[in-house]
Image (cartoon, rainbow, N blue to C red; front, side, top):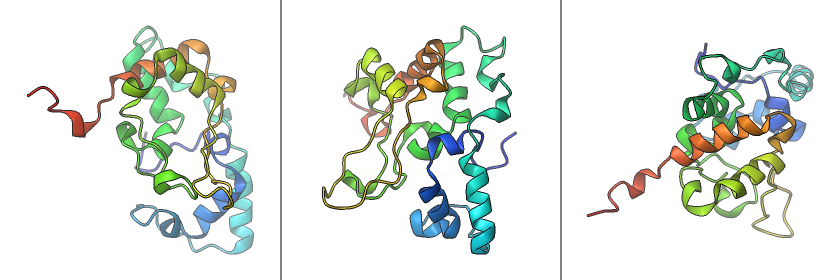
Length: 182
């Protein structure tokens, strides 16, 4: 069950040690509106926690991820939502892909929203991007590397699972464009 925090089963796959350390040192410094309290832990405890979290790469699923239940097989949209939630996509791209989560030295200072991908990508392009991953372009070319980039999910998700994820992402709509037909 979800107690309000993100699923950390794949946090070490999604984030590097540098970001995890920065986050655990002071979550509000990275994302002022986060609900995560500052843990105020010693440097040694934080280093041990970063080491632990950086090694979480899906083993908790034990080869039986929550999106591969008989109830979800063949239900692309619902299965895609479970994949989006369980793999932690929402922890970077926001609930329902609304975006707004911070990243350093990227255009707009934020990780992109996904609620317009159906207007900006074909299904094939989006499947390729999810499979291969994406390194954000630096807003300031002489500045630091962005600390968050999207890993290539083909090492975690099978093609049919990526297909279900794309079904879900293509169902998302930008709330600002609700009344396009007057």
